[in-house]
Length: 168
Length: 451
Image 1 (spheres, rainbow over the protein chains, first blue to last red):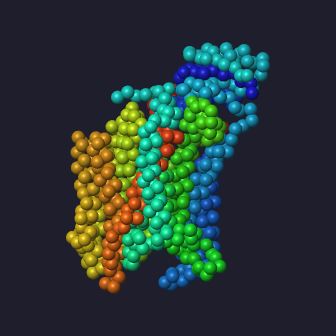
Image 2: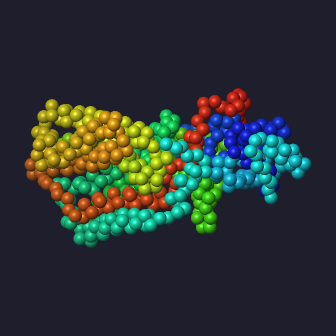
Image 3: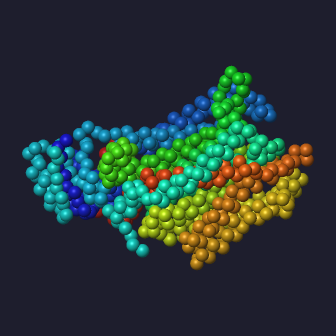
């Protein structure tokens, strides 16, 4: 994978680099930012923020609830046991199992969404530099057009403390 | 007090992973020895039968069920406390959360072993599962034990995931800082983590959702464990107060367990720059609140029983207040109420040492509380023909001690392979700023809605 990127010592210079890349005509989806911590205090840290995760968690909860309802109804009616004249299918005790499976469904849906949306690597998106672990913030462009590399390098080199690199 | 940043956080928190001292092997051998002894005691019990344990009619639930309830209670230290602190965005939580979440997972694993240890023939444990079979077992799917199965497994699954998810970015740091086989292993467990804004947002959203989901599950777990008792027509068990009483007790013992673990980690891993006295003081205040809440519940339970004046209930009541169980009862009151009230209530005693002493008192007191709920009631049921006594035997005592050693051993091993304090969360707390730089536009705030 071909890439040009800069490593920055703090959020301000990384923000400057992102702004310069935008000014050079790049859309947010073409800019790669990597940091060793969430950068909520900076605007670039809010890129790509929206997610369906909350709704999918609710959906997972609904699926879990339905499964809990079916399971508790089926087991109680398929193996009916008279315990002190209590109803075969009683809501109160079954609510416990339905509740637990609802929550389990929501938890599984959340984790699945995280894995699918953020952890499975996308083709052509593998830019990384181990210096990120030391607190440097990477701002770069993956697979840039050959004629744009010089412009991008200039933009990335401008912010204070920049260390610009190219791969391969 | 210095506040470490960036590279120093990496170095300090990765040191236990990358360097191994002789102390590590010594601790593993020490705690491992107790665990092996516990295994031998359990093996003897299986070989010779339950006769070598103190369990006999009418008291079939004693040390082992006490341990089961106690460890499930300790498990409330982590996920519940961590989830609450995450949701209220308490900044001081950052060095504490992982220490706490680990306790939950290991305590649940240890607690869940006790129904198996409590079996004469553990290899037939699957007979307990309420599944239909051709052995003429007619399962009762409405049994509170089925609720236990679902609640504990949901909590364990949720807690493991709640612990694992925020470990992924730290695995990436270890991957970047190690070499050879260790690097290859951490590369696999880092799941391709890079640290893009998208990954950070998804992770934080996931942690928020999990925190919201896990709090009611944690409350339900100990309520349901209390149902194992309160659904039974046994003197002093069949009471509506047991649900919240058990939950409060569980959180109480959980905080105590967490304080002890934090103090030990601080001392042995030299984490003085990360686990500050203020963390202990805040948790100490929480311990004080829970001690008062515990006292309130005990007062309620005792007063209602006393005014009810039922003969069977009063027999158990006086057994614990004045007769054979009185020394244990008043030790429990001292450990759970008097000691934390004095040490955590007076500010000059709310030091790290004070917190540890109060917590040790609470851990002992809470174990005794579980024991005193179970044994006196089973030994003094409604009719005198079912009266009986119990004295623990060496096998039970060794198994009990071994579970505490197992907890310590698992903790030592965990701290050896995984940063015990969340590196990225600590770094994220370095630059708290109320202002977004530059201010968010509507376009940036909303972004594009996609998975």
